[in-house]
Figure: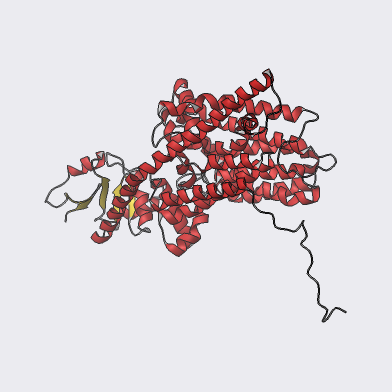
Amino acid sequence: MTAGVRQEPREADPARTPRRLRLPTLLALLIGGIGVGYRLALLLADAPPTNSDEATMGLAALHIARGDAFPVWFYGQAYMGTLEAYLAAPLVAVAGPSVLVLRLPTLALYALFLLLSWRLTRRLGGDRWYALLVVAVLALGADRVVKNQLIAGGGYPELNPAGAALALLTVGLCVGGPGARLPRWAAWGLVAGVLLWVDPLILPYVATLGALLLAWRRRELAGRAGAVLAGALLLGAAPMVLDSLRHGRNPLTAVLRASGSDVAAGWAERLHGGLVLGPSLAMGFCSPGHCAPWQLWWAAVFPVLLLIAACAAWRTLRRASVVPDHGPSPRPRPGDPPAHRVSAGVRLALLAGAAAVLAAYAVSDAAGRTPVESSRYLSCLAVAVPALLWPLWRAARPLVGPRHRAGPAAAGAVAVGTAAVVVLVGVLGTGGVATVDTVRAAPAVHAEADRHRALVDMLGALGVRHVRGGYWTCNRIAFATGEDVVCAVVDDRLRPGFDRLPAYRRAVAADPDAGWVAPDASPLAALLDRRLGTAPGTLDVVTVDGWRIYLPRR
């Protein structure tokens, strides 16, 4: 019996004593918080600039929130899943349609990407200081980078966290026990299936990481694990599969048909856009809208570093016995590959995936014709950053630690380490300059958003419900007004354009009082100005800063 017995306090169990966060972990939390806070500040300043494609995703979220429609694909096409719309729909239902509400889930996805990248770096053998470096690089936010991460235009913000999650799950599947692996198999299949539906840009990573699992876990995949993986994969890809069965169409064919640009590009243009401009834009080294010559130094370093990192990972993978890298790793089970080989294998898979992404982009017409804008196709190169920068860190680390050797070998190591430090400083410095340029451009973006809000307010004050306008005007108005105003697309010659929602054109055509909206000083505005007059059938114009609203006279 123990009632009434006073129990003596137990001594603290050292194993249960809470461990204090180490300095690099605290710094990583601080820098990661600054990266998220910086992006939140951009969102509050209406940056990066929105567009009609993002508004189209917003309209999908609005329809889901209302229960009017549950689209599988981005409106107007048979590819690119609407995951972002489903994530934003609950917020739109509560707060109403706005660009900020639409982007809050993408901000959360970026924060998740930072967390997963930290964890992935540690699981791949990196120490806490190297994980801090990776977080610092990914916290930088140049124009092209924040557009990829924050604009809810379909298929980009979710790719990086999903890719990092797949890599982490691959590590766990290669080193964990069979009993603990079934949930990981299910998670791997579910994430891969969702990616198949959302955007095929990440498929090279799915293929390389999947090949690694097949090489090391083929016996397990032949049993229950394979069934779990296949079932989860089908579940994740269910929207795509069901739509394909229902309508008899192949989304992969639609993707291939839509890739590239309307005009074929020459090989010189493709290679310049893909291999010179592309890596620098994707890494976040360029200023808004252009790359200065000095910001293109990464184009020369990137392929060399990619090759060095791949060779180093392959060498570790092939060696029979090496000293494990730094970082905690579970004790391997009998028959499992050693932890250091798993780390090397996953690094190699990530690097191979990055090389495949870059190669696919470099041979596309989009790389040659619209390299600045189409460099968004390289956004998932960020998934490979923990593997890409690893050789630089390994070379630079001895410079900050104690030196025990002297002689020609030590001098060579110092020279290599110094070069690695220079490159790492260049990465942080160039990305920092591009981030500052993005901050400087934010006031102009905010001013343009204010002008658009004034346009929307004026349309409401005039009682306009139906208008015609350019592609980059129409859906943005419809989303901003919650479909109180709908818009039919016309080109600069007033011919019907591409309506992602055909119902809008029918509604506009049925309204004899439908107006026109055009940006000030645009070709469309110049053509509509010729129709101004005082007689019936001519147009009257109402000007708003940056915009012109044309209304028919009766």
